[in-house]
Image (cartoon, rainbow, N blue to C red; front, side, top):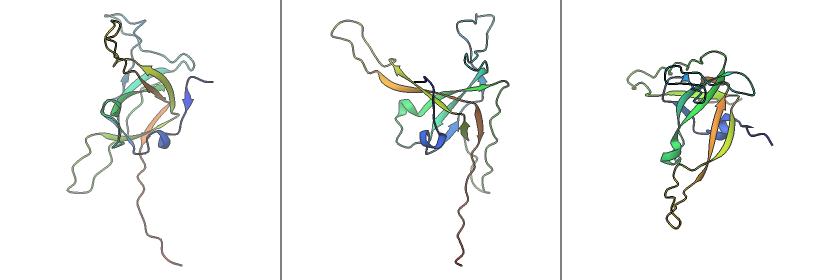
Length: 151
């Protein structure tokens, strides 16, 4: 069983996804020092790892799971698409709607919410979480509704 599971963007994010930060280098904490930061690379592909903070547009997503970081695998720094132009009188979108190509998900156990180490005082609120990687970030193609003419 592969540790990275290929998934379809629309199945994972049916309500869409928004970039809430710029794309930045992902740091390799094992190889980096305070004075010499080293960019992380993906072992299986050899590609450089970049990252972008995103927000899931699912209105039912729990607060703790709504915003997270996606790792982007690419030779050169990916560029976010431009925000869509809004009709006159409408405010500009605060975040950039995006779609991800080559999306994979890796399950892991998030133990950040576990507290207390003393017997009887431990509160385990561990949960299953997902780590997402993608090989492409692209603009959302909005469909315009058009009425079909009767034949």
